[in-house]
Length: 270
Image (cartoon, rainbow, N blue to C red; front, side, top):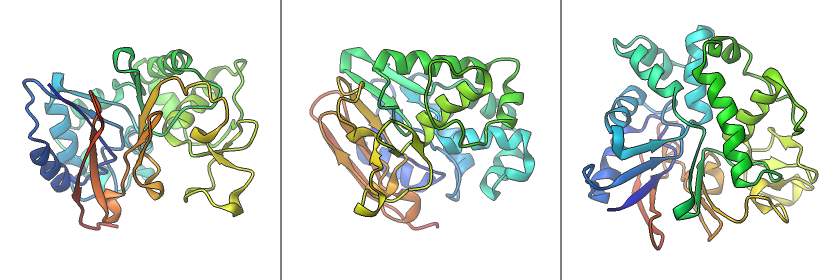
């Protein structure tokens, strides 16, 4: 049995198929973990969704910001990019979106000391708190009022975490953090402007995973989202968005033992 985590696909089905062949993936005994952003930008988002959905018990997927964008596009059609409009018009759109809406925001495996999330974790959240807060947001996405939340999802505010946050502001912060975080200010305020790699001109901002005494540093975090950083493979952080949709690579990492990195070259679509 092997467990492979796969980075952001963003509709690049051909690269995904080649990567899975290279892994010699056997759905009868292996697992695939997907860090989110299955769709958008790439040319075959619908095929990616259908394939991952078909894996059933041999895959684990966490939601990324582009996956949430797809869910919101059903409620706000003017926000739908071309690849998303194709999904929304498909005969199996209702089935696929229902499945997507019920996916988790984080996946925690204590036996592997590993937490998978799309973008990252607020520096003040420990692993169990991260899971608990994710479950709050998941209940909203899976509940009867999910449409109302999706229509109110698009905002960068609030940018400071407080346990006293309530309602839409609380859920929005949780989701923004788990699916969009990159840089934070020294006291943990989120920054959504800077998207490139850390440089001197963005100080005092720092990457969320570089915070001293980060509360989640006791576990290995597997994530994607930050393609400009490329592969980061450290004991406490494994970042595997290697810019497939930008023409670089699609990357998988075997995580049930010593880390093994497997990649395929990508065709630039953007």
